[in-house]
Image 1 (cartoon, rainbow, N blue to C red):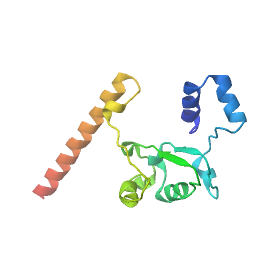
Image 2 (image 1 turned 135 degrees about the horizontal axis):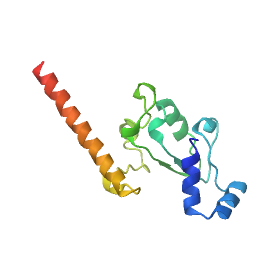
Image 3 (image 1 turned 90 degrees about the horizontal axis):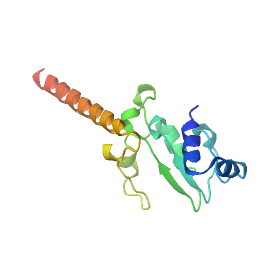
Length: 144
């Protein structure tokens, strides 16, 4: 079930017969993160989706699979972390990797949501709520 969104995206981009051919020829591979250990991915375009739920150890393992001629895109939303103890490999990744030539970080916001219009409104509401909670916590600490 965790791979279903990737298949959905593939079928959104390519007609079903074409997608099936790409998968059969192994021009496109959809694989769980756990199956990356020990691999080297040469001449590939690799996407790690939902990276907020990768642990720091899994993130390091994944990033060290990059082979010659490959490009990698890591996507994730730090507001959707649901790994135990919040140990997301996406948190702090930009700080760890800053200064490495050939890497870039792109931050998307509410305006980049491409789902139903209401999803942008929902995301904005959660961001406002988190900011208000943070302000209340800070005010409580300053009083104590």
